[in-house]
Length: 253
Image 1 (cartoon, rainbow, N blue to C red):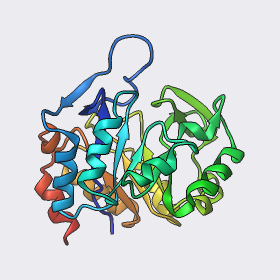
Image 2 (image 1 turned 180 degrees about the vertical axis):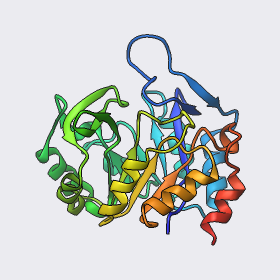
Image 3 (image 1 turned 30 degrees about the vertical axis):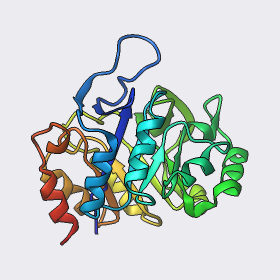
Image 4 (image 1 turned 90 degrees about the vertical axis):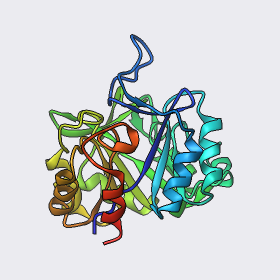
């Protein structure tokens, strides 16, 4: 059954909700839907109290390590960590309390997928402690994995064959639909359907969920095989489309 997975997105040390694709190394700052006054540890403690397992913390750029460690300390072994993770620091983040590490950009050299780097990472932490982030953008080929906070398209397309290839190397996949992330205009139904039809390993989808109808749609389209993260629409993050207590109740059905 589709479950709600909580998230903590960190930018400049604060919990934020940012419109996908507006966080860039050049140009103006990102479009922010929400900036929390509460610290990351408070959010993690709330998710722990409500037994919302399988959630993730994403560090969006530098200056987030302290906040991330605060969240992990609030729920040791309860959340995954991503953002700037590589073979050299993955074990450190697991020791800090992450249940698993999430990796995208480091798996690519010059925007080209590196099987050697994946093998190095698996040898370092084991597939059971690794989540592969295949967040993507729509292209003429369907969906293409994007790296560097979704700024750069890679040579890897998101297809069932890609999922088949990578599944033995990880415990699960995290997939943001970057083109709809943070817009609260509905999920990418075609992508959710494709992921559900594949369904051979745990997958968490993020992007566009605006109402509980979207949560139900993900469950329906994926046959309950794809989990869901809700960000900007959630009242916990300043949104008005979905109540946090509705999602807690959804997970307890």
